[in-house]
Length: 297
Ligand code: SF4
Image (cartoon, rainbow, N blue to C red; front, side, top):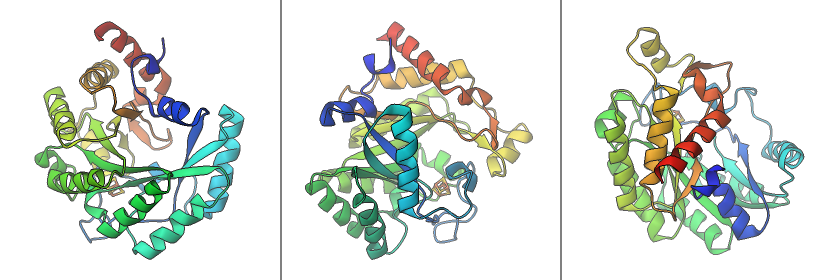
């Protein structure tokens, strides 16, 4: 019994499409975020810590070095020989479009890279960025625009200092979908003052607009964040492992089968993680969700 018996996983989607394993290589292109530099807000989301993205490097290596290092690790671990460059750290569409294209092209030009995943905020995707991604898509590259939404509830988004509302997500998602650029929507389970009903509502709102993929993960309390202070003061209590497994499985059950799950849980480096500690046991969570799905599907 494995997760892909019940869930349309990204790994399986890629395996079917390319008849071989394809893995993502996480990249840090030294972007920043408009929610940190004052353009949209200051301080960033209450759970955001720079080190969550690249705990080991203050000044990231050149992209070619990062790609090669990622390939070396993945080929040893999984044998995969094709890769997707994953612009993950911060807001990877937050720059002049011509510079963005140079960075994206640089990664795409490397051997065995078959596409890109671009992680970003929904309020930071210009039409020119969509033009670039659409062109890649039309050329047959494996493209995904990963949009961090977290919740469709504007009150929650305000509470977590997200710096954008659901409206911005709607606009960007619709534009990308109209151009047939695949999108993956990030949702967090366990946000402050949210319950399972709100998680269901967020999922329903996202599905109403349409999406190609979803990423679910629990809210992490990491050091040196506003959320860490709230947690220390007893103002925020994380979900239990059982709650997370139950909520995630129920959300998966309510999702149409053609939607690809890029992730059903997540963790961060243990050096900075404060809570919930159970999220470090990634495989326990995945196995728990699989078991729960076997009972409810
Ligand atoms: S949008 Fe992302 S990078 Fe920016 S502050 Fe929030 S979590 Fe951090």
